[in-house]
Image 1: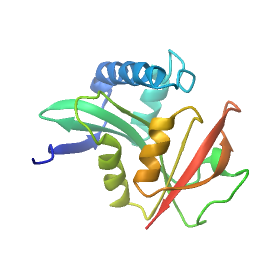
Image 2: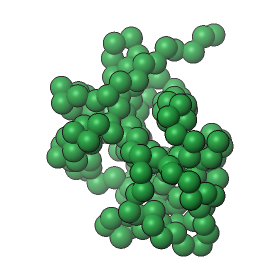
Image 3: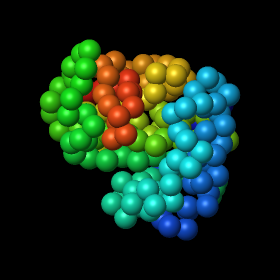
Length: 166
């Protein structure tokens, strides 16, 4: 069986309604798999999504002309990663961070596709997730990330932090 052909492109403002649908699907999935608290009902806000688009860090994954996934790939130092507790980063080399990755569930493997795209542009990738997000923890470890410690988000909540180095 062949893998579906997924294309990745920059997100545009016209994608916002579909992104909001995808994030609603993702929040429902997260709650159903034991992670009801990572993303509040209004997260991510339209303002945040627009900022991601304006900063050119937001991407969509398309399959057969339909947006089936989204993620943010942001290069440079992430201020929430400046301090890490209970561990250390694998490397201090320049990195990019994957944020707000979500899938409609229509196509499997969106995380692997986003990571492959990220590694075409960066040698070091960081990501974090909520302690209750067992599905994402398994996905990042399966993809070759290593657990590095705990970081605190902009709002003070703890996240498990991981890094992948080529």
